[in-house]
Image 1 (cartoon, rainbow, N blue to C red):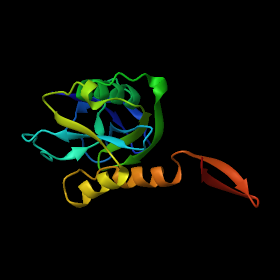
Image 2: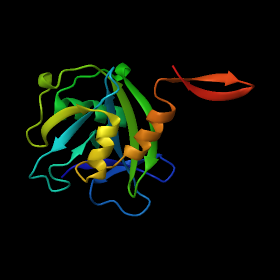
Image 3: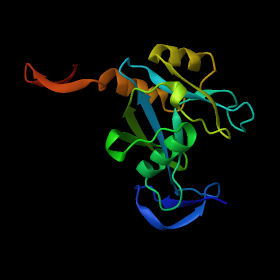
Length: 179
């Protein structure tokens, strides 16, 4: 039995916990995703086990749920280390934003790191492979139903508009410009 902290529809902690699969209407838990990018603008994805109950053999980004007493940042740091062996400091992880699903507040993070996939230690109970792919390769995996599309649309919007960009003023208008 895994307990999770409960939040209301205003993203406020409600000072109680429940089993993660027993939430009712207007009860939310914290979930998290992290996009791992290298200097070649490739994204690190991982493949779920063939025996996984949900989305077997499919590729996805690192993700997980916060346990009782965890913030989303602590949860994603733990998930990174558990699932693929990356020990990232909180300072290296950038908060991107959040969105709401049925009973989740999904917190989204970004980690910029260059690492050889051979150095990663995969959690045998969850991950069977990892690889770096270009954004278009990841999109093709999604289009051919080989990858989970959760958070990809949000990632693509963020990547296209904000990644490696800064706010500049041109003709009196604030715009995002790639650097």
